[in-house]
Length: 108
Image 1 (cartoon, rainbow, N blue to C red):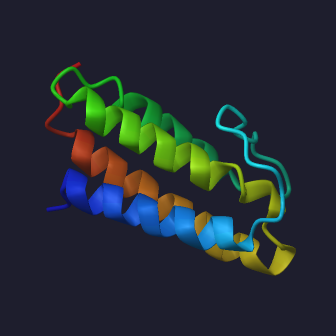
Image 2 (tube, one colour):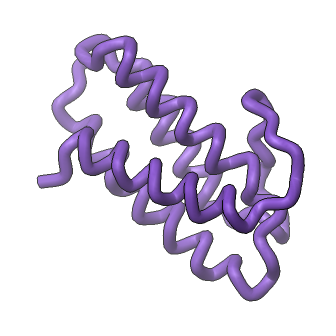
């Protein structure tokens, strides 16, 4: 079973990896829409994050941390080189599955 702690750790690792590769300015409110540079799996990841962070049984601090990690990760998506997009799609897909698993016990 995937726990919220695992999800947050995964999101933190994803953020560190993608931010290290990013040369663009960070923007806490800028989440790129899916394009040729941003795979649709990443849009699904955003939907899963949005759903999980509206969970009434999730502590507000956890919601805030999840949102911040997602935003930090998402700001670098558009800067992902073409040869890294397949890996980005896989990372977003795994993160989406982890978010969904964490939210299964959530009552909205």
